[in-house]
Length: 239
Length: 239
DNA sequence: TCTGTAATTTGCGAAATCGCAAAGTACTTT
DNA sequence: AAAGTACTTTGCGATTTCGCAAATTACAGA
Image (cartoon, rainbow over all chains, first blue to last red):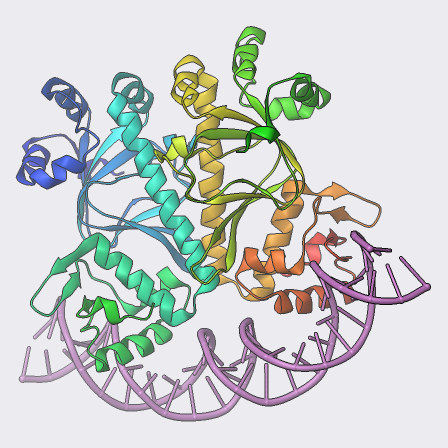
């Protein structure tokens, strides 16, 4: 984290959180008193990251853990050959960079902003303090880990059993569930997403993604454009 | 768990643990006093599971968590089409069935014995008690979760970027690392393992596994037989 | 408006992998 | 010893998917 893009918590973050009552529900702070919430927030910094920049990189010392307030980010790994693989996406209200929950002292993947993002961050040293002081925090970290394991498990099963077309469909449907916004034409995935991005989520090539999406476009199942995916008839995507 | 194959901890388990000093190092009990270890052990049951039987099934109420003492087990998921997918293997010294660490009240995968196994089990209710009383326990659970996430992440990257031949090689090498025993011919994977099993680990067919392993056999890289895999020259397996 | 860049589409041949079928082999049970 | 079962091997055609190339389109910046 470079010093110039991280600040002690200010009105900005508090207003961001108050702005969205629904978001506040998702925070690990839900079962806390006003005082406790203020204690936790007082130790947080706000971090704003432009699209395609990283919150941290694989191998970095795990100095902080984060809570995403706005934007979407990808957790990615890069192979020795330089191929990117998207492990999962993080949406607002979710914690990330929680190396402490894995007894790690470095991050084991890179967190890259898919769209401009805002996150709260805490120094990893307060992790154990929060666990000890706030029972809801332990529970929140467990849930975060559990969701993550669940999602990775699903992904392994999909990659092991489905063909490319179905894997692409599943990946799109997952993003629809996680970030979908209603529009007149259908449900739109709420951040810029290229064919290449989708191929990195599904272990295929951008060409194959394009071929299948063109077919779905013809069939009126999706309505996608440059860096944009709208799903009109989710139920008609293949299994 | 059926009542007839689970017993309060007896000399059997204690002797099993004392028998193998190395194993004792791996236990989450390492930093405990004799008294504390006895407290923990006194609440455990011993469970013996024959090869191909399950410790628990996906969807079961998560009544217990486990520590594997002997044998190897597979964590598997079954698709709607009945295809088995092996998520990972558990070897002696590792905890499993730790739904509590994910804030789940049911198991989200099936644990099936690859070879006859012995495990300690505790009722899930004591999880939080152990966490509170024994700091080393929290650390051990974090490490267990961290290793698991790490392994799943690796698997996702492999499935996304490698061809079938390389995926098979990686799967075999991982088992060699986890369970390999030195023999005169090379390193043997220490439990019965069929071509079908390997295909369920790598998202391919038993036929493809057989074809590649036959090739490696011809090249003297492996020496495998019925339900048996010995790797002679691990460094010559493809990437 | 023009120009350059990034993203997408599409065609076509090559390669990888599967699916089916059949035969061979090792182990178990009777 | 014989029979049965589970596991493995192998061949071959069908299918999926890739890789490369080229053309097209959308958007951003000058």
